[in-house]
Image (cartoon, rainbow, N blue to C red; front, side, top):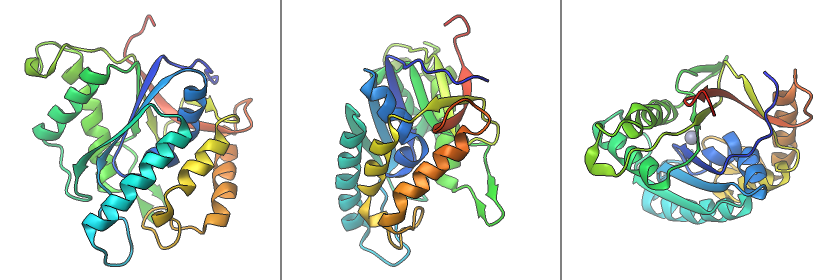
Length: 242
Ligand SMILES: [Zn+2]
């Protein structure tokens, strides 16, 4: 249960919407990137419905891509890409699994980060977004056996064994990353998502409160450990003798 400070050689964060990775694991990605980890961020949906008022979906998506690319740079990520699905229209399809297997086999990460799909009821007035659950399950299925077994999808490249999966927003966390050196970059990366700061659908807070909110959350997530600021995950070790 102790925090493990070891940074992986490469990490692939796959999340549903343009600001999800930053909020869920931005401190971890920034910390690891500064320690030499090759970080890739992949967004499955294009963020076209990320507003509480009616918008032009293509226009919003274009702005959110620019925001996301800026955020990825601030975190020190090597690459950012979007799979271009419409928000709210995802399903656990073979098509999505194939896209994710191709991604994993191409980027060949040591660690994959995504949302814990078993987290549904996260508070008295909030249950987890369908897109988050669909992406979480689809990423797990794409990692194993989808990518690791050469008999699955033989047309999508050489098999690749991901060593660890870290699931954010988990109700059963067992792994903590010290983000004291990465939290400032996380705050800046979240602030890069300007469309989400006031009246946004998921974040919905004023810019002046973002830093305080993120540091306070990191402090809460560190409780029970020796750390001051942390992000917590459920860890799946797919290679036991690592
Ligand atoms: Zn989201």
